[in-house]
Image (cartoon, rainbow over all chains, first blue to last red; front, side):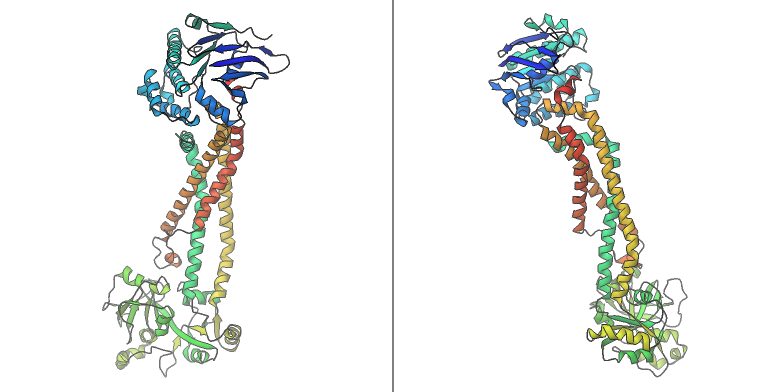
Length: 211
Length: 408
């Protein structure tokens, strides 16, 4: 499902990131733990097709994503990779439902029923016509999860999804991610420094920081 | 969801900013629209009313005033001329036809024009009701006059002395309406037409007592028959040959106490005079449009800073660089396109307000709700302004570095 091999990346000569090979099959979970500055987010960006590494390949569903050019990579990412950020980053001029519609529009998927289903599954169907500013933090994070998952992605990447949440909401978010990933048979990768997540995902690797 | 809706949502999330930009652009374009409409209609109206009139002969004075008063019926006449002299001039072999006009009276502000049937032919009038005058004090009303004053065939009224509506009434003899003209879109719509004799009889005391004159038929061609010293106001002249344009004006201006003026020449002179003002207003309009364009640029450029994160998020969920570029350009186009539509609407609205209460003035012939081909150019021009204003912010969006934005 996702395979990252021989990846090397550096912002400059003194910041060589040591990036382990990663291989996950459908339905599998992985936790990448590390302190801030250890390159966790860089790894996530590389895996998500947002940042091209100096060398190595990232394959998602048998497609080597960095061999795709320009818009093709954007469309592939939109359709096959769901990214969840530390902060919700929902587009505030749009309503909850429109945020999800936009994700389908950009990735050129037109499966309206998935929007309804995702909103129902995450318990935010009653907020579908709400403005983003009227949502609580927990609800906002759920909307961002719904938007990442609305296209049934092959890989779900979550960057510090629990960092700004209390214990209860953090557990809820991790539970939701795991549940949806296993339902959609997606590979789930969570990048975090939050030790609370370890209780839920046993398979983890540690990032050692700058070498 | 589509690009148009997306851009629209972002615009209305800042209603005040968006509204102000649209209004500013609309204001500039409204001025341009008004100028276009007025110029087009005014000029074509001027041409229509002067059609068939090659030269106007009247008392010495301002030639422009002579044209305005006797062709367009907006200014005051320069004075009267002796009919014998007018007759002599009209016998010139270069003249095909000379139509005498006798002005000076009005009814409720509508000018009473004493003339003959040639004037009716000149404007190719058709009668909606009744027929032309045959005896003194019989009149034919233009369509607008009949409508505004609610007069029909057989109705009587008293004329007043002077051109304006507030002058004293002639209380001796009433005019009788014998016909009403169909709408022609030319100056006759706003006139009360009658024979030259009618105008004379209201002004010359001795005729009033000669009651047999009242029942004699009036002259329908040429000049009325009379032995007395009589005056008319102007002569409208049609040339027999192009040669006349060269010789006749000079001949009349130098050899007689009369003045000759050419409508075409005087009107182009008038537009030249107005041209300076029109150019200034046009310049002002373009300055406003440029400021609006600048304001749209600044608004988009500033919003780009706030929106870098949104743009990066759009990229993560599958938007391509081109789509982001298009997203910003589309905002510019929506802003300016709406501005153009609002501006054109404002222009027409402004014109229709201007025309209200102007039934008799120079602007009365303007129809505010006619749309011109040139207005499509206004919309295109506005859209070009929108594209130009948004191209720098849009290329900023195009270059958004997703990973860098998201890790900030």
